[in-house]
Image (cartoon, rainbow, N blue to C red; front, side, top):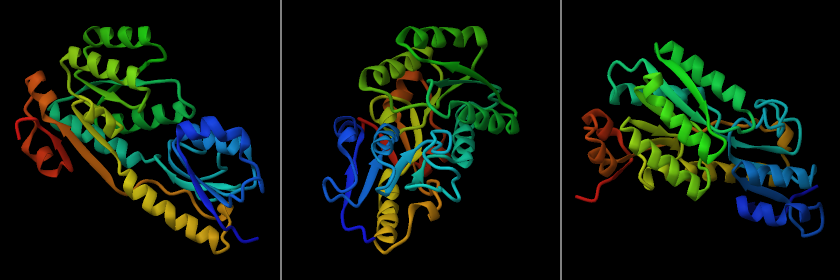
Length: 266
């Protein structure tokens, strides 16, 4: 059966239209979904229309695919799953905090959380870092987690979840600044809005690659046979305004490789 049309859904669109996405009702042949909520909504709505996911963390744990190498259903695409990117974020923190030994990892109760925590622990252990996992599910939990940093003697912070909603994101950035500790984020929007530094998948590249999946499916390939691939390109964003507020000097080696530097003095 030839697929003749593709539609891209974001988080809000999926929330509004997820229940109406049914085979044959709108002539949609392929759905391209951005992020976890949109992808889950689209998958719940149908099990036949091909779905190309973009930017989903651990689609196996979410139950979207059987295996990354052989999805086995109607979903495939580009995930955020990458042990290499976790190691790179830790390496950046080590450059910001020479001698880093204790790291606070801020997470929320996302699907696939256990695997993410294990990947972070394993990567941190290989670098001689003790990772302290702090789960933040409410605003109060966030305040308590950051209050523990001094007691736990954490020297740096890794915000592993996101991008959260605007209000929660702003509060996390505020609490991080009050902690006076270097923080690295998993999503660019944090650094744009006042976080210190982010190392994140390049979504422009993910969507360009998603077009390749769409092309293959339009030409007859089945999602079940197209492996889910990890991100290949990443963007390092540094907020020098925040660094100055923290009294922190960004090492020249990090600045030299930055894709984006936010600096109101330039």
